[in-house]
Image (cartoon, rainbow, N blue to C red; front, side, top):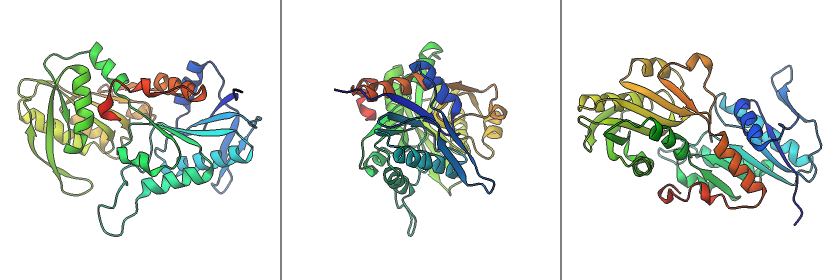
Length: 319
């Protein structure tokens, strides 16, 4: 079977991660201009031949969300019109994922809209990490490979293993992820039961599980304003927990997040680079881990038509 040459391109959302992936794969980043016209419209030009090539675009749909989404869509269109053989959108963080259902009257399902836009633009495959809701995979009529950051994060805590560890889900919806971490780390499991007052404020109710005298690890997929996480950490402290750690895949860190984390009971917050963390947001409490190796292996396997299930088979509960 003829093997199509592979090329990697990126927009402006996460260039550092894209360069890490290219370094791991031993290849240069594709030559493309992704800039702006004078009035602010996005300007894209592919500066090398992509005809018949297997092309991967690395772009997180992170803040500024709409700018980065449009860059991705325009890059896909440019590559499709340049006769690329296959276009795979590598989206470490899939934005708009929290708008995945109609939980109120007259609201959109924007996660599905984004899936439609990506497909209509010419995407043939999507590769992403830790979707906010697993059902988003069903929004796509093209293949989607869903990876998990658990190996990267869990390995960190195996090396720096706190004693008497309990993995804690900050809400009932995160039990599946917390259970997988607890199994991987051979730790206990607890859940913070909370009631959401509005989209910015939550009221913690009680802790399900034993946390008194234990070191706790809060795990979740997204941290935005950090309100829920900080309140969960305080609830654990109020219930007798010792040291409190947190592991979050996607560090949006918007609004007062950094201020809240500084003042919180959280001793260490471990995040990944699916979203770049600005220098002014790097504080001693925050540690950033790279998912470049995970994505590099997945890209290599997709290109060479190999199964990527080996990257998450050991965690069937997450699939």
